[in-house]
Image 1 (spheres, helix red, strand yellow):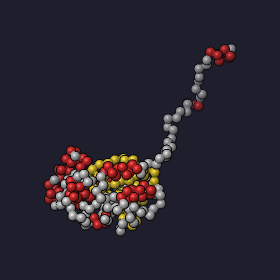
Image 2 (cartoon, helix red, strand yellow):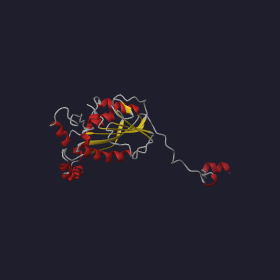
Image 3 (cartoon, helix red, strand yellow):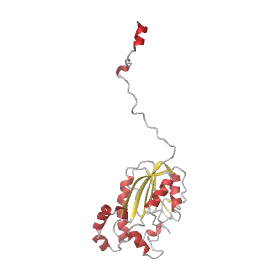
Image 4 (cartoon, helix red, strand yellow):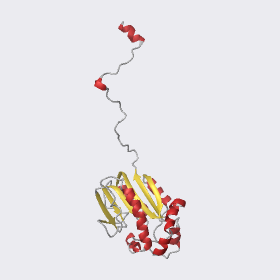
Length: 241
């Protein structure tokens, strides 16, 4: 499987619908994440870092992008990236767990990873069961949100946010997609965990690491640097007399 083979499918009405829904989520998530280096791996048809304020941003993929490699073999030093975007990268990785391990390796402490993927517990998951082998995107891994969260926890990631999108059934024609636009709004409210795509934001934690913060609650200097008067005990008064 290769995420690059999705390019043709993304031009279909259903592929365009997916891009529109995910673009909104990525734009909102990356805006308030800071650092120096950010990477988007896969889905290079979408500019998911354009709303990021991180100064150095680059794309990576199996056969496209500034960096070309497998997602589970990143040729980067440890603790290099502050932000990693993986739109459906786990879906089309032959080693999805190792892909996450590589992301954790090259990420700095307190760095963020943002992941999207197909939800098997949805109408999209049912559509996958009815599809022929080798058809995109239905031959993706379709990992459950719970499994992805478990993998992230094992790698010492803290879940910052998670949600679902693409609640509309995966119809092929644009007319059906337009007719059922209301389903998307109702689905997000009535069956939020049944969306066709999950979305996760996680932060890398390092065991034993403690951030040093200023002691804002320390005592303030007294006016004119005068010493604070103290009460004298009866014994002290007798000695003075």
